[in-house]
Image 1 (tube, rainbow, N blue to C red):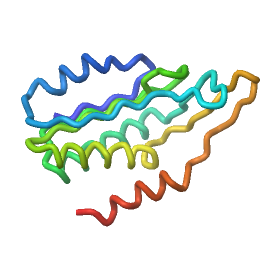
Image 2 (spheres, one colour):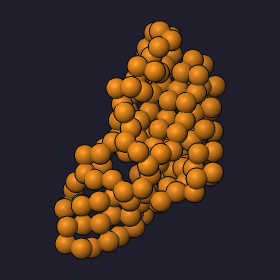
Image 3 (cartoon, rainbow, N blue to C red):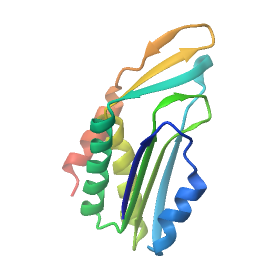
Length: 149
């Protein structure tokens, strides 16, 4: 089962965990990403291309499911306006054994940072507004998965 969503609404982590784990898969790994409030961040706004963003997430989930023979993958990303502390992304990967679930979860979050069509705009308490540039470290982490089998 692969479940992918791009949504402006709140991610109900508890409900998603219940839905995802209903199959008794053996091991589930999770990543919950939240908006940081560093440097006086007041709001994070994520722009996206609805069709391309969803397609990129679906392809990542499919690739992870195939690579690690996962019976369940959940990948949910919020878009629109968010405040510090809001959940921005949920990644769940399940397999019969923990090593595959953990590797798949790491793969998904690393590749998500570079493969999804998402643009971040930060607004700060002092009125500054800036677009977030892609970081070299994100590119390096995503690239490391190309060499792994």
